[in-house]
Length: 412
Image 1: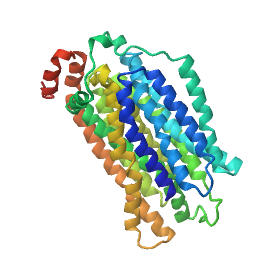
Image 2: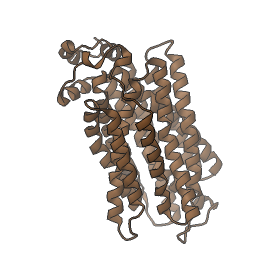
Image 3: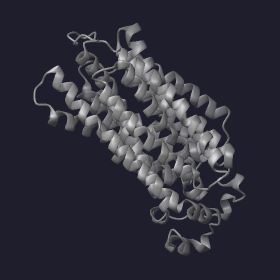
Image 4: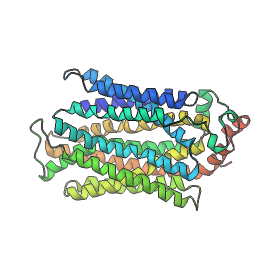
């Protein structure tokens, strides 16, 4: 229904704007680009909370414009971190940054449901975010400094030379580690997007199926599943990102292929636990939450590591463009369409409009997440075959050797 439309409009605007900010981020002052984007994001979020009740299209427009802010910092912030830290320190700082994805998503469920319950009006949930946006703007303005691209890697920006956007994209399309890890990350986005939109609904329907919850017959429905799922998402995000970083750092001492192998393990281990969570929902709510906890923990191991892979297989003057491309592809094939696909499959399987079939059809359709997680794990295993060569070529990149770099085979 309407929540799906709002989600799709936001993701689509996010995807369309990410390449623009990627292009600007590789060529202009990144700090000011983020300042403008986050300021606009905060104002639009505040404005969306004042849309009239009967103006759904106005709400749709303002929620779509929120993509401006997210596109501005998602494509640029990791590149600033890359220009401030190297090696293990960079991995740690990226992990801190990527805590925001699962933790922020979880807090969205928690704060949104809590504010809605306290104020009796969901509009107030949208008025919390602009205050946090203002804090981010002030910190960017007075704390963050614009670093030189590639400065801490002993490759100053003036030695690298910028190339055209088409040349950048041509080079990135031939970077096997970047492309394969992007497809693997797309699987992560697919599963995350599906769970973010459908998990609370599935848990609620499971409660009705098992007799633990009464059917919703009024506007004041039980939204405790959103709260509990938000808490699980926050905790698993912290545990997953932290454990992924620690395991990767430990394995790097043995092999340079540690990062894609850890990402592959995270997805392959999450698949059976997510499957068990879906199956056990019809008999045990506690078991369902336990398996969701384990599945999301392994799934969250990928966030910071994928960003780190991008940063060390792509030269500094192309990193924002690479991040934008990864965002577009992962959202286009991942969380932009996955909630809709799950809903379509569920509707096609439903034979009758009863609570039993509402639960059963959604249960079967969500099993698609486990299959996609396995496919994503395969992409990361393939990344491990090329990671060493691509990293060495990025470290030894020179503008004069660009043509040879682009035409080399992955194992050369």
